[in-house]
Image (cartoon, rainbow, N blue to C red; front, side, top):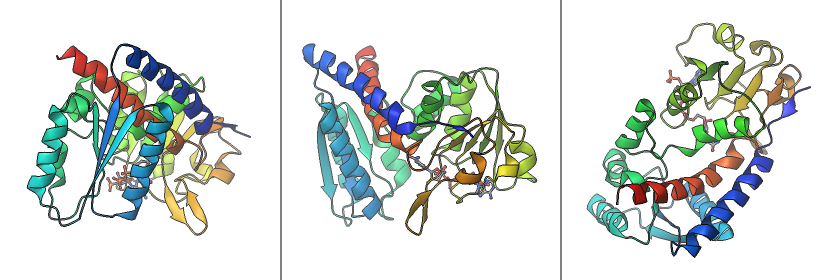
Length: 283
Ligand code: NAP
């Protein structure tokens, strides 16, 4: 039976570290602050924004939520972001997605100052992932790595198979994992015989969005299985891995909920602190 990759336990340790860092910054006169921009009333975005507010405040980080009606013009959103870009008291900016259809997501993502872009969506940060330079990177792929490293998993030299090449998780993960010196295979919806590839994995990461896609016979005995998927099912959520079956063969496995997802908001907070370091560097 697999050992659990416990996202909640890792999150607790990370929160303590972040709290400590925030206290140290405050002693130096820096009061970390995250601004979240919410356009419209997409229910999931409202929940995510509130959860960031709770987490920021719990950690001692200042937080401001800018709620704009869904009819807001693109120009108005860009003006607000520019104001936050210039504001020395705001260290991180996050625009909740999706945006209303009349607003260009690409334009908005490119308007946030790269060193305040705590969601890691600015084209410059996407480029830094590829080049291996320091930047702000998306929280979910970072969570996949953090949950392993903090549970004593050695990534270097391993064969990591990632299922999913989405812009949010799979694609950025390839380059973050490469930085840890793994050999990487990436699979997607056009990959024939998915199981052939997943069975080669020392570390298998699922970031697909298909409930319980990864079955027991697709996993090498003893493999480490990280599930980034979040799928709504009657009565709750489940991952992309058939957890109950796969835990019988895997060496380690992350549950859903309680795995990767438990770390994402914490890692956005960590990005605010990394942003402060980057902002100081370029001052
Ligand atoms: P996405 O952009 O929709 O990408 C999904 C990927 O899965 C695509 O590359 C797609 O292939 C591939 N795929 C779909 N069906 C497949 C199949 N049957 N076999 C193999 N590959 C298949 O999704 P995403 O935004 O990257 O998110 C991935 C998952 O992570 C979702 O479950 C999402 O809810 C979850 N997520 C979790 C968090 C968190 O905090 N834990 C945050 C964000 C997202 P093609 O490229 O060929 O279409």
